[in-house]
Length: 410
Image (tube, rainbow, N blue to C red; front, side, top):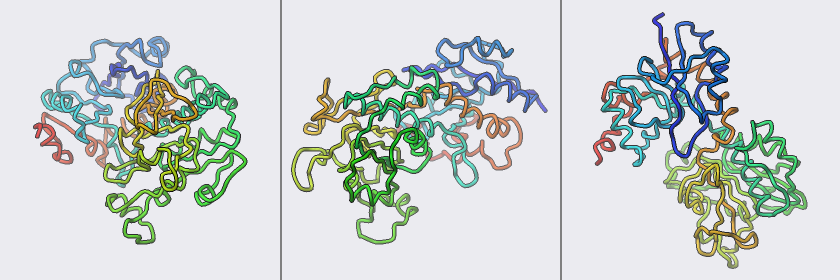
């Protein structure tokens, strides 16, 4: 087969992201699997795997990647460093017409780049093949539990990003003291399953939604809810049709308060469509009686992190270095300092997998090596790469023509 050269670019996003698409061991595996593929790595002082770890395995470091056919990263690549007429793989964040990245798609078109976006690498059924979602759930739930310790001042956990790997982070969970804490988790996809893995390390009983909403408990419990638990048709029509909800979310209203009014730690791990109802409204957090009675929530870990979205107290994204802020339910505003008796601790980090970059990178790259790069460098009968290619040869591809107005600034 024709030789192909792949370059692993350094991450330049600010704040820094320490993940890498191809760790050293996976590059060796790739070269054994595809002998016609050569891989070089751009040096980086920020990467979770050091340059020395690559060099120890005989992997070449190369600053100038202009002789590579394919360039692979994780986050958006700095526009001045984009090399014309190449194929790039990274999370571009342009296909949903993100205003802040319009300049990026313009550059991709101007430079004739074939942009393959990880987010749209799917099988013939539309199921994503590669993602970091599970790791967002794993770390997000941990951060929620760490926040609960900060709120109660009863235990202290190390920040996940200061742990060497997941094993060290999981060991921290033995310090968690829950008493009769009630934890609610919304969602059922990869993110929620990752959160469930973290909660599985606790001494805590899982109860079903009906038990959770109707009973009081003298022990710690947690509950996971799906869409049919937290929304209902406005016209009262039954039974719940999930496909209809996904297609017509505006026909639904939230029924989540019966769970949230029983909750100390809420972990939001569900996908949210802007046309869907919010889980709650800011007025639901205020002091009062009856329908407006204060929710007992102490900590919200909004893994999905839709600003002013499903969780309206998510006012901004926080950072790995500063993952929390205090929220005042009475004013609906962020506080410089909070009081545990009156305020909610919010966790809204939007790049959670970056807190355990070695583990997350390894799992991500396993899929990249086994399922994506072979299609990219050889046969692709299912058109996986084609479906994820947003731009090519200076034009939008057929599946992404809907971005034309976005590109033209209309």
